[in-house]
Amino acid sequence: MKLLTAVSALALAVPLAFTALTQAAVAAAPPNISLTNVKAHLTQLQSIATANGGNRAHGRPGYLASANYVKGQLDAAGYTTTLQSFTYNGATGYNVIADWPGGDPNDVLMTGAHLDSVTAGPGINDNGSGSASILEVALEVSRQSLQPTKHLRFAWWGAEELGLRGSQFYVNNLSATERGRIKAYLNFDMVASPNPGYFLYDGDNSDGTGSGPGPAGSAELEQTLASYFSSIGVPTRGTDFDGRSDYGPFIAVGIAAGGTFTGAEGIKSSAQAQLWGGTAGQAFDVCYHRSCDTTANVNDTALDRNADAIAHAVWTIATAVPPATVWSDTFETATGWTANAAGTDTATTGAWERGDPAATTSSGAKQLGTTVSGVNDLVTGRLAGTAAGDFDVDGGLTSIQSPAVALPSGGTLTLSFSWYLAHGSNSSSADFLRVRVVGSSSSTVFQQLGAASNRNGAWGTASANLSSFAGQSVRIVVEAADASGASLVEAGVDDVKITSQ
Image (cartoon, rainbow, N blue to C red):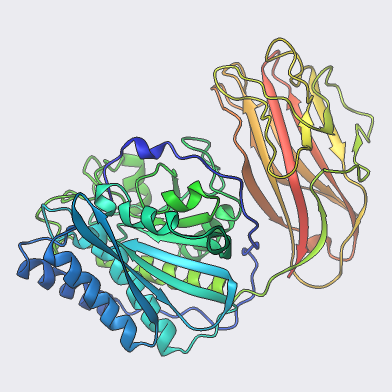
């Protein structure tokens, strides 16, 4: 993993469409990846570094030997492989790109890890661990003769440590058509830190910090990985899309991304040590970017769990049967949403409406002037006014209700939508954005509370299982409230969809 630089200021492009995966059916159970096999790859990478000046860095013989090792394994397993060369700092670098035959060529799932080390050491945790893990997953695809519905592509990037050079070169040299075919990118950088945490890239921006959510589909990737760790009783926490690894060039062009991370030079807190074990007050990886990042610098439990999580994600996503759309609304035309349908709203300004929103700012973006798709969304008081608080939510609750939606009686039903809640530091937990589903009963399926801190507007995504409403006619109710006195509150919702799997 590279050091944090200005590249962390990533522009999240307009999202590409991505199939929801949280309830995806799979054709075959994900395998248990052999820890012994993964560690054998790490031993090979260590031997390569030892024989080539102690590292596997860009432009050094240890890197090319590492790339040739990976390529040789994949060639023997039946992959179509390419050693893509590029030049940086006067030296030749290489990406290893491997395609598994079959699957929809217009629906590519890509899984990647950087293969290079820094010059100071062999880079076994950073990032032999991710490279070896995805290599063994790729080899297991071959052993099982997997026949995915999506096309599988694996990548090992060069010169990540010098600023994501290999992955950026790859993305820059894709045609617009080829970019459009890659629907998701999974990134695994440092998955065996000796004092590990269990972090997932925060695709839905549920943490509400940093650079915001990933492109559409990133939330589903996060949920797919979270489901694996939940199944083995391991809690996870979010890590921001801060631009420190090879997902950066992908999310910058609107490709959904996700992945896992066990920590680098950051210090494990007492709360994190209580959550995951290990040593509080010590770095997740004390050998980060040092000569001691050897095969002795690996936590076997973290490595085993992450390798299995990678396999779970690849199998779940790649063999998913696309869900059928039951109902959707992008708000580009009027479809029958009704404001204050129950007649109980109290808000004096900022009532929900469908329209083209104007942007407002107050210590950062508050009402977003851009939508997820098209020009319209549901927004609390779409006008800007002369001051940021002129048309925000004031005086209490505002609500808007969808037309009736007839749900089928079979299958897994999933509601998904894009959202944001923005507020000033004068907010509190009494303020909220809430989504309810009303049929023969009522259920709150999403809620984001305010807080006494500034929260800027940023589109996130959410989903909820509606299977308990199967066979019913339901309405979706979207509510926002400024219920804690005169605080600045803005909210938006876009691209609401219900699918059946």
